[in-house]
Length: 277
Image (cartoon, helix red, strand yellow):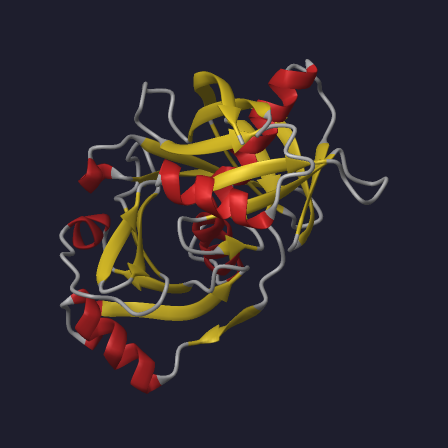
Protein backbone atom coordinates (compact mmCIF):
# COMPACT_ATOMS: atom_id res chain seq x y z
CA UNK A 1 0.00 0.00 0.00
CA UNK A 2 1.02 3.60 -0.63
CA UNK A 3 -0.02 6.68 1.36
CA UNK A 4 -1.79 9.08 -1.00
CA UNK A 5 -3.26 12.55 -0.54
CA UNK A 6 -7.01 12.55 0.00
CA UNK A 7 -9.75 15.19 -0.01
CA UNK A 8 -13.50 15.10 0.56
CA UNK A 9 -15.14 18.05 -1.15
CA UNK A 10 -18.65 19.42 -0.64
CA UNK A 11 -20.01 20.48 -4.04
CA UNK A 12 -22.88 22.81 -5.01
CA UNK A 13 -23.48 24.43 -1.62
CA UNK A 14 -21.89 27.07 0.58
CA UNK A 15 -23.77 25.71 3.60
CA UNK A 16 -21.50 23.29 5.48
CA UNK A 17 -22.47 19.73 4.52
CA UNK A 18 -25.37 21.02 2.44
CA UNK A 19 -24.13 19.89 -0.96
CA UNK A 20 -23.01 16.59 -2.48
CA UNK A 21 -19.73 15.13 -1.20
CA UNK A 22 -17.13 13.52 -3.42
CA UNK A 23 -14.05 11.61 -2.26
CA UNK A 24 -10.90 12.50 -4.23
CA UNK A 25 -7.72 10.42 -4.18
CA UNK A 26 -4.88 12.56 -5.51
CA UNK A 27 -1.74 11.06 -7.05
CA UNK A 28 -3.44 7.73 -7.88
CA UNK A 29 -0.81 6.64 -10.40
CA UNK A 30 -0.04 2.93 -10.13
CA UNK A 31 -3.28 2.10 -8.36
CA UNK A 32 -4.92 -1.07 -9.66
CA UNK A 33 -8.52 -0.98 -10.89
CA UNK A 34 -9.73 -3.33 -8.18
CA UNK A 35 -8.18 -1.15 -5.49
CA UNK A 36 -10.08 1.84 -6.89
CA UNK A 37 -13.33 -0.14 -6.92
CA UNK A 38 -12.76 -1.40 -3.37
CA UNK A 39 -12.07 2.09 -2.05
CA UNK A 40 -15.17 3.49 -3.81
CA UNK A 41 -17.27 0.74 -2.23
CA UNK A 42 -15.77 1.54 1.16
CA UNK A 43 -16.38 5.31 1.00
CA UNK A 44 -19.97 4.48 -0.03
CA UNK A 45 -20.42 7.95 -1.51
CA UNK A 46 -22.26 8.44 -4.78
CA UNK A 47 -18.84 8.92 -6.43
CA UNK A 48 -15.15 8.59 -5.60
CA UNK A 49 -12.51 9.90 -8.00
CA UNK A 50 -8.88 9.06 -8.69
CA UNK A 51 -6.52 11.64 -10.19
CA UNK A 52 -3.90 10.45 -12.68
CA UNK A 53 -1.42 12.05 -15.07
CA UNK A 54 -3.05 13.01 -18.38
CA UNK A 55 -2.34 11.05 -21.54
CA UNK A 56 -2.74 14.12 -23.77
CA UNK A 57 -0.96 17.47 -23.68
CA UNK A 58 -4.33 19.24 -23.88
CA UNK A 59 -5.34 18.12 -20.37
CA UNK A 60 -4.08 19.20 -16.95
CA UNK A 61 -5.00 15.91 -15.28
CA UNK A 62 -6.95 12.71 -15.90
CA UNK A 63 -9.69 11.37 -13.65
CA UNK A 64 -11.48 8.08 -13.18
CA UNK A 65 -14.89 8.21 -11.50
CA UNK A 66 -16.36 5.29 -9.56
CA UNK A 67 -19.68 4.73 -7.85
CA UNK A 68 -19.81 1.93 -5.26
CA UNK A 69 -20.82 -0.42 -8.10
CA UNK A 70 -19.50 0.91 -11.44
CA UNK A 71 -17.13 3.26 -13.26
CA UNK A 72 -18.69 6.31 -14.96
CA UNK A 73 -17.40 7.99 -18.13
CA UNK A 74 -18.44 11.40 -16.76
CA UNK A 75 -20.21 12.92 -13.76
CA UNK A 76 -20.76 16.55 -12.84
CA UNK A 77 -20.21 17.06 -9.13
CA UNK A 78 -17.15 14.76 -9.15
CA UNK A 79 -15.73 16.90 -11.97
CA UNK A 80 -16.02 20.10 -9.94
CA UNK A 81 -14.89 18.49 -6.69
CA UNK A 82 -11.88 16.86 -8.34
CA UNK A 83 -10.88 20.09 -10.08
CA UNK A 84 -11.17 21.92 -6.76
CA UNK A 85 -8.97 19.37 -4.98
CA UNK A 86 -6.41 19.25 -7.81
CA UNK A 87 -6.28 23.07 -7.98
CA UNK A 88 -5.85 23.30 -4.22
CA UNK A 89 -2.99 20.79 -4.36
CA UNK A 90 -1.27 22.66 -7.20
CA UNK A 91 -1.96 26.20 -6.01
CA UNK A 92 -4.15 27.08 -8.99
CA UNK A 93 -7.49 27.66 -7.22
CA UNK A 94 -7.35 31.42 -7.80
CA UNK A 95 -6.18 31.25 -11.41
CA UNK A 96 -8.30 33.00 -14.07
CA UNK A 97 -7.71 30.46 -16.84
CA UNK A 98 -9.42 27.21 -17.67
CA UNK A 99 -8.36 23.83 -16.38
CA UNK A 100 -8.95 20.84 -18.66
CA UNK A 101 -9.98 17.49 -17.23
CA UNK A 102 -9.50 14.28 -19.16
CA UNK A 103 -12.02 11.49 -18.50
CA UNK A 104 -13.46 8.59 -20.52
CA UNK A 105 -16.13 10.93 -21.93
CA UNK A 106 -13.44 13.22 -23.36
CA UNK A 107 -11.87 16.56 -22.43
CA UNK A 108 -13.96 18.72 -20.07
CA UNK A 109 -12.97 22.38 -19.56
CA UNK A 110 -13.49 23.82 -16.06
CA UNK A 111 -13.29 27.51 -15.22
CA UNK A 112 -14.03 29.86 -12.32
CA UNK A 113 -17.31 31.79 -12.48
CA UNK A 114 -19.16 34.08 -10.04
CA UNK A 115 -21.21 31.02 -8.99
CA UNK A 116 -18.12 28.87 -8.37
CA UNK A 117 -16.19 26.44 -10.55
CA UNK A 118 -18.12 25.49 -13.68
CA UNK A 119 -17.68 22.76 -16.28
CA UNK A 120 -18.63 22.92 -19.93
CA UNK A 121 -21.59 20.60 -20.46
CA UNK A 122 -20.51 17.67 -22.63
CA UNK A 123 -22.56 16.99 -25.77
CA UNK A 124 -25.56 14.74 -25.38
CA UNK A 125 -25.04 11.19 -26.53
CA UNK A 126 -28.78 10.74 -26.95
CA UNK A 127 -31.64 13.21 -27.07
CA UNK A 128 -35.18 13.33 -28.35
CA UNK A 129 -38.71 12.59 -27.16
CA UNK A 130 -39.46 9.67 -24.87
CA UNK A 131 -41.39 6.81 -26.43
CA UNK A 132 -45.09 6.56 -25.34
CA UNK A 133 -44.61 3.18 -23.64
CA UNK A 134 -41.62 4.47 -21.67
CA UNK A 135 -43.57 7.58 -20.70
CA UNK A 136 -46.28 5.40 -19.16
CA UNK A 137 -43.62 3.41 -17.31
CA UNK A 138 -42.03 6.60 -15.96
CA UNK A 139 -45.36 7.94 -14.73
CA UNK A 140 -46.01 4.67 -12.93
CA UNK A 141 -42.57 4.76 -11.28
CA UNK A 142 -43.16 8.35 -10.15
CA UNK A 143 -46.69 7.60 -8.92
CA UNK A 144 -48.31 10.24 -11.13
CA UNK A 145 -50.56 10.31 -14.17
CA UNK A 146 -49.03 10.62 -17.63
CA UNK A 147 -51.10 13.81 -18.02
CA UNK A 148 -49.04 15.33 -15.16
CA UNK A 149 -45.93 15.15 -17.36
CA UNK A 150 -45.52 18.34 -19.38
CA UNK A 151 -42.67 16.95 -21.49
CA UNK A 152 -40.01 14.23 -21.37
CA UNK A 153 -36.79 13.68 -23.30
CA UNK A 154 -33.77 11.43 -23.42
CA UNK A 155 -30.94 13.59 -22.10
CA UNK A 156 -28.00 11.22 -21.92
CA UNK A 157 -24.52 12.75 -21.49
CA UNK A 158 -22.94 9.60 -20.06
CA UNK A 159 -24.95 8.29 -17.11
CA UNK A 160 -28.04 7.70 -19.29
CA UNK A 161 -30.47 10.33 -17.99
CA UNK A 162 -34.10 10.56 -19.00
CA UNK A 163 -35.53 13.98 -18.08
CA UNK A 164 -39.13 14.74 -17.12
CA UNK A 165 -40.70 18.20 -16.85
CA UNK A 166 -43.60 18.76 -14.45
CA UNK A 167 -45.76 21.88 -14.26
CA UNK A 168 -44.36 23.28 -11.01
CA UNK A 169 -41.52 22.96 -8.53
CA UNK A 170 -44.07 22.02 -5.87
CA UNK A 171 -45.14 19.03 -7.98
CA UNK A 172 -41.50 17.91 -8.12
CA UNK A 173 -41.08 18.30 -4.35
CA UNK A 174 -44.25 16.28 -3.73
CA UNK A 175 -42.99 13.19 -5.59
CA UNK A 176 -42.61 9.98 -3.63
CA UNK A 177 -41.46 7.53 -6.32
CA UNK A 178 -41.45 3.78 -6.10
CA UNK A 179 -38.71 1.62 -7.58
CA UNK A 180 -37.11 3.12 -10.69
CA UNK A 181 -35.23 1.09 -13.29
CA UNK A 182 -33.45 3.92 -15.13
CA UNK A 183 -31.60 7.13 -14.28
CA UNK A 184 -34.45 9.62 -14.03
CA UNK A 185 -34.37 13.39 -13.56
CA UNK A 186 -37.48 15.42 -12.77
CA UNK A 187 -37.61 19.22 -13.03
CA UNK A 188 -40.26 21.86 -12.44
CA UNK A 189 -40.28 25.68 -12.50
CA UNK A 190 -40.68 28.02 -9.56
CA UNK A 191 -42.94 31.08 -9.99
CA UNK A 192 -41.35 34.16 -11.59
CA UNK A 193 -39.35 36.17 -9.08
CA UNK A 194 -38.44 33.20 -6.88
CA UNK A 195 -34.88 32.86 -5.62
CA UNK A 196 -34.27 29.87 -7.91
CA UNK A 197 -35.74 29.14 -11.33
CA UNK A 198 -36.26 25.37 -11.03
CA UNK A 199 -36.36 22.50 -8.56
CA UNK A 200 -34.77 19.29 -9.81
CA UNK A 201 -34.55 15.78 -8.37
CA UNK A 202 -32.47 12.80 -9.50
CA UNK A 203 -33.59 9.21 -8.95
CA UNK A 204 -31.31 6.28 -9.76
CA UNK A 205 -31.72 2.51 -9.32
CA UNK A 206 -29.41 0.81 -6.87
CA UNK A 207 -30.15 -2.90 -6.84
CA UNK A 208 -33.77 -3.25 -5.80
CA UNK A 209 -33.92 0.19 -4.18
CA UNK A 210 -34.20 3.76 -5.46
CA UNK A 211 -31.55 6.29 -4.47
CA UNK A 212 -32.09 10.05 -4.67
CA UNK A 213 -28.89 11.91 -5.49
CA UNK A 214 -28.51 15.12 -3.44
CA UNK A 215 -27.15 17.44 -6.16
CA UNK A 216 -26.35 16.22 -9.66
CA UNK A 217 -24.09 18.07 -12.10
CA UNK A 218 -24.47 15.74 -15.07
CA UNK A 219 -28.28 15.82 -14.84
CA UNK A 220 -28.34 19.61 -14.57
CA UNK A 221 -26.04 19.81 -17.58
CA UNK A 222 -28.28 17.67 -19.77
CA UNK A 223 -31.53 19.23 -18.54
CA UNK A 224 -30.13 22.73 -19.12
CA UNK A 225 -29.34 21.88 -22.73
CA UNK A 226 -32.90 20.62 -23.19
CA UNK A 227 -34.63 23.54 -21.43
CA UNK A 228 -32.52 26.17 -23.20
CA UNK A 229 -32.94 24.55 -26.62
CA UNK A 230 -36.73 24.42 -26.27
CA UNK A 231 -37.05 27.95 -24.87
CA UNK A 232 -38.25 26.77 -21.45
CA UNK A 233 -35.37 28.53 -19.68
CA UNK A 234 -33.14 31.53 -20.24
CA UNK A 235 -29.57 31.66 -18.95
CA UNK A 236 -28.24 32.58 -16.54
CA UNK A 237 -30.41 30.86 -13.98
CA UNK A 238 -30.06 28.93 -10.71
CA UNK A 239 -31.48 25.50 -9.90
CA UNK A 240 -32.33 24.21 -6.43
CA UNK A 241 -31.71 20.53 -5.66
CA UNK A 242 -31.66 18.37 -2.56
CA UNK A 243 -34.47 20.16 -0.72
CA UNK A 244 -36.33 16.95 0.17
CA UNK A 245 -33.06 15.50 1.51
CA UNK A 246 -32.44 18.62 3.66
CA UNK A 247 -29.61 19.73 1.40
CA UNK A 248 -29.12 23.23 0.02
CA UNK A 249 -27.82 22.51 -3.45
CA UNK A 250 -27.58 25.45 -5.85
CA UNK A 251 -26.52 24.86 -9.44
CA UNK A 252 -25.64 27.87 -11.59
CA UNK A 253 -26.34 27.61 -15.32
CA UNK A 254 -24.78 30.06 -17.79
CA UNK A 255 -23.96 30.14 -21.48
CA UNK A 256 -21.32 31.57 -23.80
CA UNK A 257 -22.04 33.40 -27.02
CA UNK A 258 -21.20 30.22 -28.93
CA UNK A 259 -23.94 28.35 -27.06
CA UNK A 260 -21.68 26.41 -24.67
CA UNK A 261 -23.58 25.61 -21.48
CA UNK A 262 -21.65 25.96 -18.21
CA UNK A 263 -22.70 24.22 -15.01
CA UNK A 264 -21.25 25.59 -11.80
CA UNK A 265 -21.47 25.81 -8.05
CA UNK A 266 -19.60 26.15 -4.81
CA UNK A 267 -16.80 23.72 -3.91
CA UNK A 268 -15.40 23.49 -0.37
CA UNK A 269 -12.90 20.99 1.07
CA UNK A 270 -14.41 19.51 4.23
CA UNK A 271 -11.90 16.69 4.90
CA UNK A 272 -8.22 16.55 4.02
CA UNK A 273 -5.57 14.00 4.83
CA UNK A 274 -4.14 10.77 3.45
CA UNK A 275 -5.48 7.38 2.40
CA UNK A 276 -3.53 4.13 2.40
CA UNK A 277 -4.09 2.46 -0.97
